Length: 546
Image: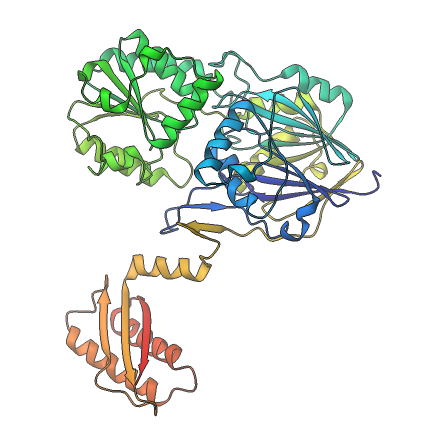
């Protein structure tokens, strides 16, 4: 069978941070690894998040034999309910990841449609006829993360998931080095490894380094402490709980996802917190300020998060009080730097003392840096290498690192979303590309937001909008005067003169229209406005017939 190539198809996570989804395809059977979302960039106005394009899989639903989720972060789990709308296949995840998935699916009313199998690191799962998946534990910034050893007819593939080599993790469970060495003994045909920190030299610091920084914050804060983090960062919850207990403060969680995830982690034994330490947020708000620490969402400056609303004074339950110490225990996701900086400044304006990564060691990455990447390559000794998870610059740098430790350049493929490769025991080569565009989620709309709509939103935000309302007779004659309304657009100091000129151009466009009235009028208005103002607002034409 090894004359048939294994196709490896990234549908997300390549050339970007987030939206991770990888497809392994062999002889009409498919294994999927992760189903993540990506947060919108600053210019993606009105978009809640972005999910992978699975149009390639829609006519291959029956080929999908299993979906493995490597850990519980949103960039690996966030699209699961959208995937299940089209693809029904068994889902495999460790206990904590299962709990987070079930909570997510239950909120979306889809839990009864999910066939979730709880596994643990070290388990071997047969998926279909061709894939045998052996899981191994990896350290990350959430407990219960796994990588995958995927035995296929062409050879053994190691898929790292998100990982770091932390010798002193918060949960005391380091990455499984022995399993990686065992894979090497068996012979690793290809390694697909996380590239997020490929630009960072040295080793990623251990989670333990955060504890002295937290200790200093708690020791020096006289009033209330608010700590913002990802809702899925269970190890950070544990560190905050340990420090709160040491300084005789009660801990409250704020935000639905934070409350739910803490509850799940405590129930499953991944968050060890005494019952008397945790209090409801309502109780915490009525306690002495020096006796309280609140954990909430919003470390990325998201406008709808607890911290985002606190920054602008629109949080319902509580507000920032002068003297609050607010800690952002996170690193900005690429593209979020501006919103995080704006949030920090607004919190300072409201009287808080804000502590963040640039001024204190209140966060460390959950991803491997360059020396760890080299160590993974040395441990597994792959014949072929594909860098995954990261922007193109990260993938390219990881490819250079692989060459430094001895992987031949011709055995390395840097690919982007939709760029499939074929793998045999002797060759790794490019294959036919598949669709992998952005699928925007805007409220309840999934995939209905086109690039044209995004461009229109951007034009409106930058230049404003000009609305033209025309009333025509059935013979095509204009009734009355064309109505011109502007929003977010200043026509000029001589507004009346410009509007008069614009109406003349509209009348000419109507008179000489050749079957494309609206487009002709739009073009005429755009041309005259640009000629007179050097600006390009969005022009919207409405035509009514009487």
